Picture 1 (cartoon, helix red, strand yellow):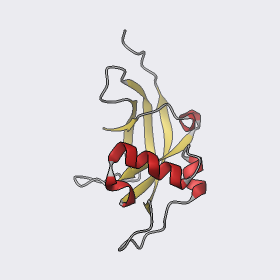
Picture 2 (cartoon, helix red, strand yellow):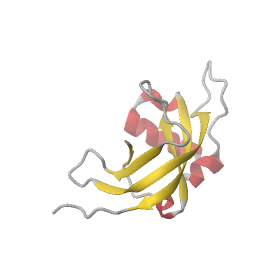
Picture 3 (cartoon, one colour):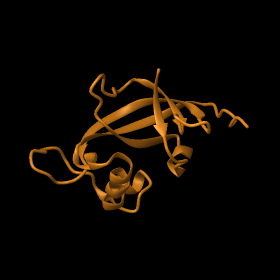
Picture 4 (tube, one colour):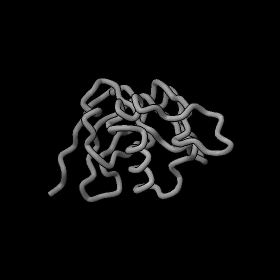
Length: 123
């Protein structure tokens, strides 16, 4: 089972279903029906397994207008539902995390919790 890492404890994670925008993977892209382990700070000593979720929807999006992208652009409503003030703020955050990739093809994944199992943070 693959890991879907979260860098913040977004309020959306309290909902029965939530969205997450992810860059398309070169090895094996995310797929509807796939079960993933949702993990807070997966590469940290503060790592916490939040539970298992199923990908129930996948829609391709462009993060910003650029030459050669014929996909729909991320809307302010989508960014707000994902926890940001606007699509511009989401794009700024992505640039700060991933660098210049923010205008690339992204997948808008809709996930549904199947099991919530919070693991205690090691001390």
